[in-house]
Image (cartoon, rainbow, N blue to C red; front, side, top):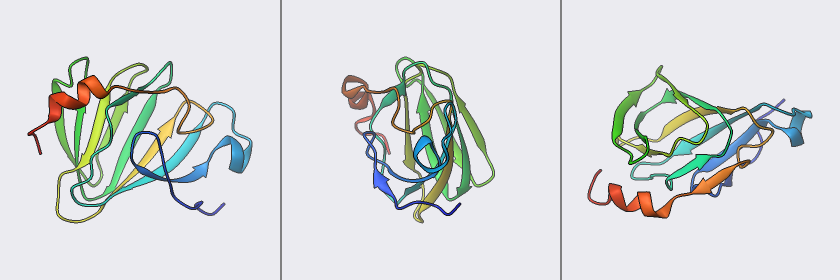
Length: 128
């Protein structure tokens, strides 16, 4: 199947659907891609009861996670990330070129189970 047209998700990222309930009939799996232009950062969020994983296909990605977003890594092309169910997290472009992330969820849609956490977003104010 071909990549679908990108749409902005609740977490302020542009997702292009690949394997979802809509495109394939998947019930507990979703595989999408997210492009992050320079300077873009997602809203802090979690996926209630849903595991997530990401693969950085290109670019540099800032990744914060944990109860108070106290964990941080800068990921580069070829790196993988795992986000357990109910774990707050934020991703952002850490470089000067667009970044592309391939994202998998243990749900039929990348928007399933999203809970936005604006109170944690404020913890990243002033950070790149």
